[in-house]
Image (cartoon, rainbow, N blue to C red; front, side, top):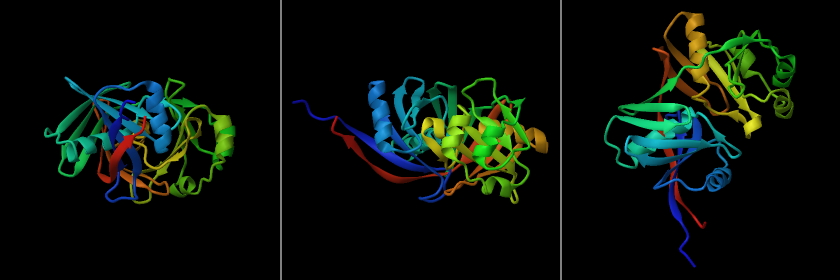
Length: 268
């Protein structure tokens, strides 16, 4: 019998200054790509909102993200977590990492203990406020927008931070009402923007801190507030803070990450 495969794995709390905060992601460095079904099975077994897999190539690293149910096109917190693992555990010495992904080239820059994601900004168009979505969320939004792609998350805008904080979605109803992820947001009481993110159709009822959502949030609020730099807070139960900037069609998101656990996956 052949020896079982043994692979390193790290669990990182992203957009967090301490463990048990922010958004946990698993990160698995690979020597080469495994079969997609095996990658999905590992992500399901990890049972975190995202598992990031990285493979070194000549120009940097290839990076893919899997929820317990599907592979996704873009994930911010797991990209931050992957960069943290490279910097903190795998001896990456430069201050910038290039990741090649389904969403194109993404960069992560290190400045001390802080990491900055360089992501594409998402174009949003006004859409009708969907009453079924609002009923599932638990309150009616004042405005709704969505990107041209039917796979992109819709943005539902509320008037006050308390509106967003008090939402108690019916996730089964939300899954039935929308094939999209739903970002809800409002002006913050002591920051520029607060948000939450719901994606029951990909197996994530509520994501703790969602970097990719800020690719939509930052352009919208930068235009509304007439400022390029924003302090953003995702007000999930775990919560997380992002210092964001819109510049030259890109969204820069800065935060911290901490390692919760490291070990090995084996037995297949």
